[in-house]
Image (cartoon, rainbow over all chains, first blue to last red; front, side, top):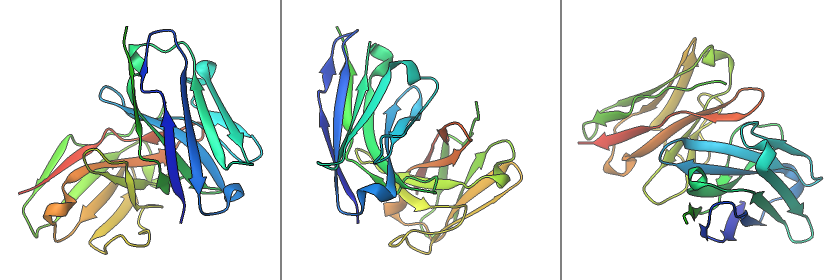
Length: 118
Length: 106
């Protein structure tokens, strides 16, 4: 059983950088791809990108230019950075996992509300 | 981009059957997954690969997919099934979620 616990700043000003981290407990870290997904009232659920234990990443083309996802295998953690945020980036951000070879998200973090406001 | 369309809302009487559709071009050729999301909580996987149930999900939840429509069926609906439901596929570039359906149990 995998558990995900996430944290990060919840209030940002426009142009700042969003930074979130997700810790993984249980399971085998190398058996999964680790994703970030966000949910805003205007756009529903939106996949941001993913990373595996080796640092291989995949990104949503719509966000790729502003997103960095990194992994720390020593701590079983992965992180999201989104630069140059605007009000449109206001959303609940979730970390989630999918087992290698599958296309579904089996486990989710608790979510972090990030608000961008001047 | 690949779009998945769901009805905004579905109402079902207690104990009856609710059917939630997810429309997408040739969705029958893709693996469709369904999530349940209750207010203030993260989504929970309830159906994967069109019709498989994760451990712990009641048999009342079932799924099917063919042509341009996938369907999540909730049999013998209970008050605790009230939630938002989302379909999801992999479109070869990104993971895509449906627009979401609010299920109300009357």
